Image (cartoon, rainbow, N blue to C red; front, side, top):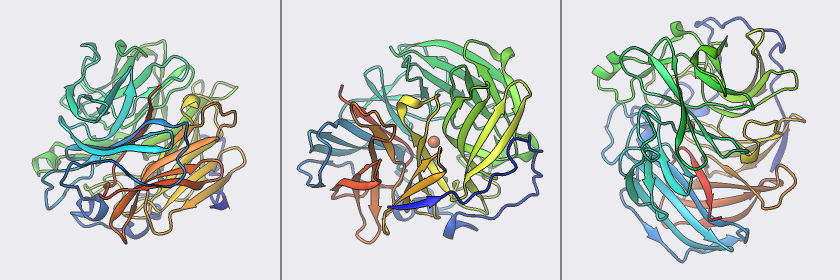
Length: 457
Ligand SMILES: [Fe+2]
């Protein structure tokens, strides 16, 4: 564990920033993939798929798994069964979930299973069901507790169209707030969907946008749902050239965030121009006392700008930034929180949409994720759990039962050791950022996207 002050100086806070010129090129900070990656980069090394579905029991625990944890940690990601040799995009391929079941300090099983139906990006528990989910028009896929595919799931017939890989759960109501997109011919729109805690859609809002935009995620606050209407759009010419994920940087599209009132409709959306950039993942958002919206996010200076294989190649700058959006003046102020390239941000699930202090992410160094970061957003300090040559993915924060401190809990992740070509399940103490337990697997878990701790209770 190391402590570190934020490097980034405030980027002229408070004032509304002019839009950056599309020619303004920042310095790549993505390590040894900064300039380029080979066409097969996202099917090589630990990005490469595994060929076998495994079920393993009797796994040895090194250290001590917290006895209170009873449930499953499950993570989804693409596992292309027949990867294309050239131009493979990381976001494409059959989904595969990797899960581990733990109870009272023991491991019941590890399994990996294909997700039949294509949902390859996230897996959540909702209304008693385990759901694999994806963006761009793909349907949720219902999985059994043992991660076998049941079939497509449309929330008891109430889902009108697309879903998303990033629903946001309101911790007070249990509702899911979902911003979906399905790039196709005009009229262009994104669609907001609310799913009740009981698992049925009870609100749908179609929001017109200017093009076939890629909207990966959303944020919620007490009164608003955010539309990240940012300049990555579908390019039919790329599709004709054989690209299966034909999304491209399109600075002429402009960049704005829409604020949809939670109790409003499309006509009520407040649009605010923001600097040209792309955002896959916000860490969290909340309303300030003066009615502004503060959102922390992993921001790229551009995306898929001549490189159509994945996010971590090309001369791209990735930073953790804070935007404060003013719905009255329709302005944004931008601050740099941390200039280290980092992704897969997470925070305390009970503080989704609320003021929070601690956020977690992993550093990105080309094809590896060598450190797990903990940000103290109040003091500006951060802590680093260095994996010493191993490589993590998203680290999911799980609060300790009965905890009173925000960071009293655990971080769960799959960690890959390139020297041994094996993976392990790792649990960190989130306060001290030290490893509590690890479970070495006899198989490899490829890098993937997102997952959840799904407790039995
Ligand atoms: Fe994502």
